[in-house]
Length: 225
Ligand code: SAH
Ligand code: DHB
Ligand code: MG
Image (cartoon, rainbow, N blue to C red; front, side, top):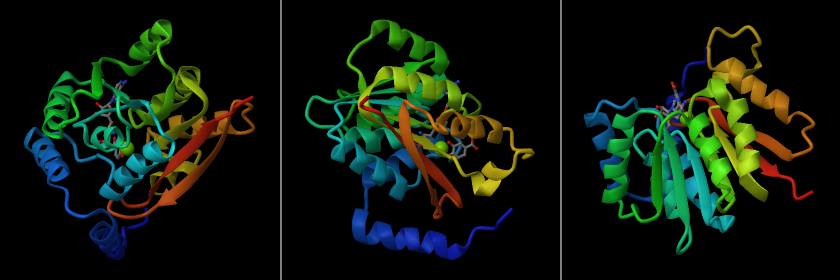
């Protein structure tokens, strides 16, 4: 396993200082998450900002997130919504969802965000039955074992041209090791296999280093047909 280069975090700090700035609401979110004992596995600040900007650039009005944790990435995504936009975020753990709701209230975004508690696959099936407004952007960051399942739902629940983003798709390079002992690798490799020559979506993945070590985002756009 590669060890993190301290310059990766230093460069993240430089980026934050110049392009993002101090953000007391998000600092408070991370403090509340730590106080509640949530694992510190939120996206980094530079990644969160990227999610906000992707939502804004795509003029997203309906966003789906799978994996809320304490609501850190949800706050970023919701900030990228236009007037009247909505984020639906799915979380398995009721205790995490309670912390997330408080953080989202503190951020003044509770009118834009719905947290749905339970196994994401079941919630996604319900959303499919309701057939509401299709999503413009989907951010997948829950159990990696189910990434292939989440891809299937994400495509079914989104409009042509929608942007699908999956977190943690590099795993310090573990992704290219078919015999990896990281249990999260096979599910993520399955995601790549399904997207290989997939007629429904065009995709790439971008490797990242920084405060979250060496990892990456996979991005796919649902084909217009
Ligand atoms: N997106 C968050 C981090 C998510 S961490 C952020 O960047 O701030 C992954 C989350 O997925 C955890 O909170 C975990 O409880 C949740 N999760 C794991 N398995 C799940 C499942 N089957 N259904 C819904 N959520 C799940
Ligand atoms: C883990 C999950 C994540 O979504 C992440 O970004 C980092 C770590 C984890 O389960 O360890
Ligand atoms: Mg993640």
